[in-house]
Amino acid sequence: MAKSGIHLPYVDKLLDRFSQADHDSILAFGRHMHAGYWADPEQANSSIEDFAQASEELCCRICQIAKVRKNMAVLDVGCGFGGTIANINSRFSPIKLVGLNIDPRQLQIASQQVIAQPLNSVEFIEGDACQLPFDDESFDVVLAIESILHFSNRSNFFQEAKRVLRPGGRLVLTDLVLSGPTQPLGQIMDLVSKRYVFRSHGNSDLSCSLKDYQAIAARTGLVFHYFEDITANTLPSYAVIQQLKRKRREKFQDREGATTMSILYWLSRLRFLRYLICEFLAQ
Image (tube, rainbow, N blue to C red; front, side):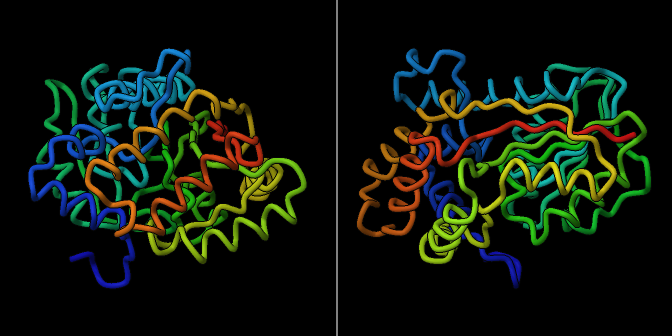
């Protein structure tokens, strides 16, 4: 069971599948719980193996933007099952890696799956993204991959990220960001969140725009430095997720989840939602 006060239906379903040794679910989400990235989306083949590799590619692209390198201290907030930590651990040394998550079940799996390479340190810590349990200026890089939409308050997280980053450090995150007229879209996404996303994914805020992120950064003393729109590069992820639901005959048992994925796919394909990688600098 999830910790009291944590509502994560999609994690509940995944853990149930893992307990049944569901090979497809483990391959698709046993390491990462985020979208895949295809440099050429036309080359995506809708296989679970291809999706798993694309999930690794997203990690690599994010780390490239964050300029992750050896001798750094990196914090992954909302680390899930530790996939991003594992990715970095396998490619850089020496390096200090910390994964933080509010759900101890995810951390237990991460701790079992990720073993520090020689000269590296890996630690998984239970905690709240808006009250980071770390000293000031502890990290060179803070990452939040498809997790910030679940945090209780984006501004509070930014304040905490700014506090724990060293001067010159980077906050790099991914999020589904509103484009176009934000007020009507925000109302639509608020309805989608309350009616579907909450039931399938728990507390989620899909109403943030790029201008909102720029304003939050300005208020918290971070410099909005760069963003990259990878919407088209991530769209093949939806086909794989829906394929998994069909394989497990979940279409009717998980109406909210299936509907949520369909809505997000079409809003993204029509460019009302954009999947962005955003980079912020600490001064």
